[in-house]
Structures are given as structure tokens and as C-alpha cells.
Length: 295
Image 1 (tube, rainbow, N blue to C red):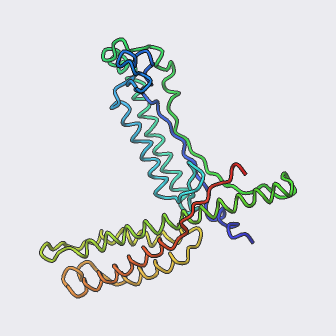
Image 2 (image 1 turned 120 degrees about the horizontal axis):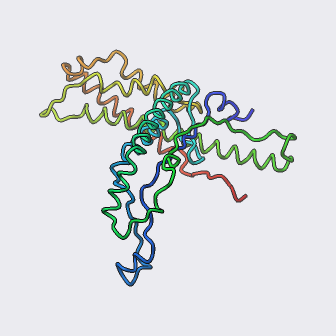
Image 3 (image 1 turned 120 degrees about the vertical axis):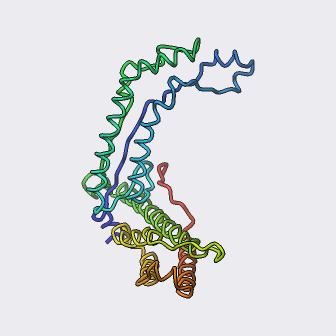
């Protein structure tokens, strides 16, 4: 059985497609000539509208992309992310919510578009061109997503044996890279969380800092979600997570604040864990597999 055969039983891909009107345009070469005789060395854009008006729309799409990245793993194909099946319903629900907000902001923008265009006309002067502005401005905004599962077409159904073997190899190479990317992403996220804890536990005694429960919340959340996020069954990551659970088991912020020895032991244990995670990242393959599109 291929080692990647069950990946798409535990997860699927998501593609989020968003777009907003740019609100700017390259300046024509004739305009650049007025600036300098060496206009071929100049490139410039003109704003068609106050950028602040488009700000809320960019914020919406940015929040949606952050949501997808937060609950997914990277994937070798641009714009695709791998999401565990346990997170699908939640991500879909949140994206629907974000889309509703995006629609409201688009409607608000469209309602003020004529006024914003008139403002631009006053500021641009001779550079203003009515043709730069879309007749149907609402069509310039998009917010969609789809869930995708991929595989090599079945042997003997569509592909010849030769093409099938070639495409199978490409698929396996792609999934190998996906596995390596997931390992790097999860281990680096783990390292960042633990490193932040080490820094907080290492504060100079002359500048005491109260240890709060929230400091361990991120680590606890990461460990609890790892079972579903560890799609490729990274055994080294599982071992390190088990060590982390043992390290924080039974530890309370109260005890760390009032027991210097306990705090020192925790700092030592977290430092050891942090070093182990860092070493595990360094041990990962450095090569990056790319789809052999030209093959």
C-alpha cells in the first residue's frame, strides 16, 4: 500500500479564491516622458481611488486567508492547503461568516464609488481617465472557496501504463514534499511556542514577571490539536509532544510563581525540549521537491 494512500481519508485540500479591485493603474509612457527624458527607466502607477476606501475589503480577505492557514498545513501546489477532516465544518462555517462580511463591505464600497471617483478626478487632474474605472465595479470583487481531493487517475481507465507510472511518480513526489512541508510547519510552530515559554521563564530575577495560565494555553492547544493535525503521522513530532505533555503535567502557574526551584526545573526542562525540537527541524530533508512539469 502506498504510504500516502490514506492521506485524503484524513484530510482534503482547500482553495480560497479572493480578489478585489486594485484601485491603481500603470502610468502610460507618454506621462512618464513628461517626468524624465529617460522614461524607459521609469515605472509608475497612479492611484484611481483613495486606498483607504479599499482598506476594509483587503482586511476581510486577509482575515480569511489567515483563518485557512491557521487550521491547515501547507501544500506544494500554490493556493492549496491541506485541512484535517475534523476542521472542515468549522472552517467552512467561518468562511461563510467572513464572506457575508465581505459582501457587506463590497456593497458599502459600491454605494460610495461615484463619490470616491469624483474625489480622484479632483486630485488626478490631467491624469484622470474615465475609462480606467469599471462600468460594473461590483464584478471586480470575488470571495469563493472549494474543497478538493486529488489522486492519480486509475491505471487502465484513462492513462496508458507508461503515463500512469509517470504520473504516479509525480504524485508520490508531490506528497513527499507535502509531508516534508507539514513536518517543518508543525515543528517550527511547536518550537516558537516552546521558545516563547523559555524566554518568559528566563526573565531576570531583578525584573520578576508573574507566570500566567495564558502562557501555557498556546502549548496546551497545540498539543490537544496535534492528533488531528499530524496527518502524516510524524513519529518524531509525536515523541516530542509526549515529552511536552509530561513536562507540563501537574504544573500550575501559582507553583511557578512561588517556588523558585520548581520554576528553575521547568525552565531547564523547557530548554531541553526546545533544543530537541530545534534539532528535529535541522534533521529534516533540506531538499525541496518540485513537480516535474517539464518531464
